Image 1 (cartoon, helix red, strand yellow):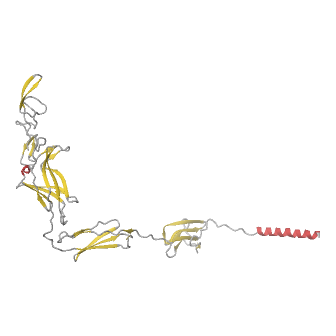
Image 2 (cartoon, helix red, strand yellow; image 1 turned 90 degrees about the vertical axis):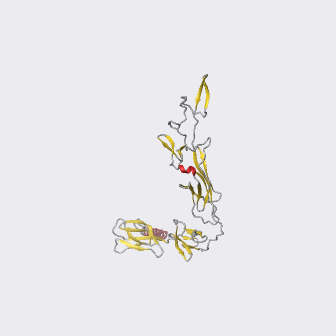
Image 3 (cartoon, one colour; image 1 turned 180 degrees about the vertical axis):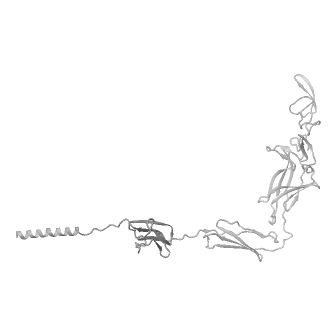
Length: 372
């Protein structure tokens, strides 16, 4: 009995040892070596004959964005930028490819940008045909404008989208057209006028100026010229002075120096029509627009035009419209009192008695004379 039990125990121990030996003899699960490419989307693909390169193409509608390539014991992952449908797989260090794999994706196409549809161009359709036309919008970064010209009384303008963009309705072109009328201008229709416009000669800081206030009334919108001019004449000579362009409301207001007049940088008068500075002396001359001091007619002109009443401004006690007259015997135009030897400011008296330190002196002074 004791022997039987001993045999059973011994058998059990032998069996356990045999099992342990058997388990230890089984091979372990091997980890993938670092030089083996991951399968990626294509799976690992072995080559035949280790070619120098391999050309692969993604499935329809896909783009390859990278690949793994192995040669010898070295593998590389190579990004493909930008992604391509077909790629040549090449090992960076070796002249052969033993296996490879690659990844790919389905590209998405963004919707093209939508552009607002342009508004109707500005057409000009007046009575008759002379003032008919249009304003062709300027090209932009997104839209080109073109015209086919006037055909059968119809003008067509086309807006074409550049690149891949579209208008909000999906179209890439928009055509605008206008049928021009050819009606005779009604002679009873109100015509454009400059009624109420004025131009005036004004003396300011010893200089002659022209002040103007122009107002265009154009109920039919037929006036295309916007430049205002003042035309002056004495019957023989004529001078045209451009005053400027009318503002959008048809008005223009301002001032300009009289022809022949000038001022320095500080606005001080230093020139007058009909006067010339010769050898330091102001002398009258027939030149330098002297005739404008006696104009007989003037008009403001835009098309239409209107006559205005304007004359060379008269001098006032505080404003001269000509230089100081040169004293008899020469001088530089000053009014110093040579008779008394007094070198101070000129005195506007004809004769008088000045008492200085108890003594009386008879003084003869010159009156400062200004010429208009």
